[in-house]
Image (cartoon, rainbow, N blue to C red; front, side, top):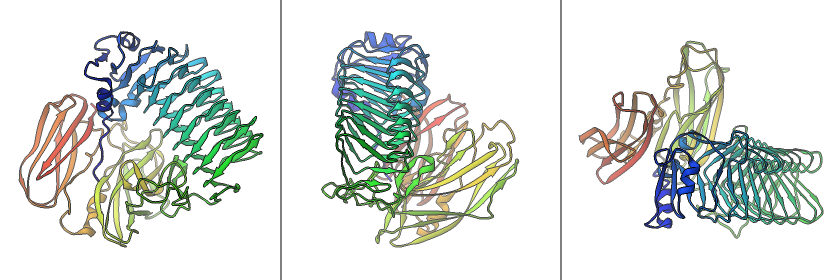
Length: 571
């Protein structure tokens, strides 16, 4: 399906105005701090990949500090552009009345240690903090990941994990009104408020997943003399030694809690929600064990993959269309409960049935045979993306192995195909999970299914591809006729790649086709196809052995169809 490309840089430059300057690090200045110090309001400090051992202070400069994620939308630049506080202070400090135009976008922020705010420290400031990974930071008292005092930052689309403090392992705020939305807040720890701790504050906490955090009280969220608005979050798998595995509110806190899932949190006093003084308004929530209030339910939310921290709803979840009836989801239906809404415009139920279980792949490699089922439950024809991942021992998520977009599924149809998945000898030994998803890649997951297998050791250095494509596309499309119904181009495979990669595309009618490769500066590198071709499914291999490592774009033009995708060459 067609995707809207992330174009944050255009928004930033339009807001900044025509006189904004881009300062390149390390091209213009060797350190990030020098770039910030020389920047004027509205400038962008653009940082190349690498590890920078610095403790930064914006010093009142309302600049945009960003990795190449800003200009490309490629999330690999988040993990490869690291600001390391080398345990000497907060990694980033805002303390001179910076406003929302002071932004931090697309970094891994790690290894900071301070009395307050190990990762990011905010005092009397309102910056924008988005699309970062804030992990492995600590504070002696408040805010292992992020600290806010008399500040109202916008904290969105971040991964905040593995931080620790006395209060607020992930985020702490005092006398503040931050907006905290669309974040993953997990595996943080504290005495109070493992994920979030708010004191004398009125934050807005919306559309976050808060999971696997630990505290003595308030495993997920702690509230002290505070009145937060907590809506459309998924709070699951948190733990507290005493009170409130999910949420703990005390000393006259009065939170408004609506459209949230609180499930499988643990504490001896109030596994999901514990109130000690004050009053909570709880409406249209799914609370394990139940809770009084309008529209509240107590039912298994049926997550796609909670063991992988995938808290999307499966198609038969009781949380679908069970939220506040005065609100609607983007698909126009009644609001769902939880952080992720279920897109009812996208069909698809997927099931995987492996043959010959338990599956043990020998050291030299082998094949897995499984049946893949996809069902359209909408009652009318629809289109869906199908993609697969593997969770690899010692590596984590790998893939997508297969990514096929815009597959047409007839109304009320069930397709079953037998698929062979190759596991080479270079893949590491250990226990694997193989997962198939259907939905609108990558943002919307409608359903998933998975199975386990193991491999006995590995041959070689494990640098080559870990799993070959199972070629689901040919199998899935075989039920839809001999010719595709639309133009489409798939993600190259493998990606990232070394030297060669394959690009597949489809033509519904005969057309003149151009398939071109560009570098990140918009310069054409190679033309792979420049000819008239017949309708059907096509594939071409790009041999990139003569070009350097980096991010490249490939563009398909056929008839009135144009589509551009990214690929990464790593040598």
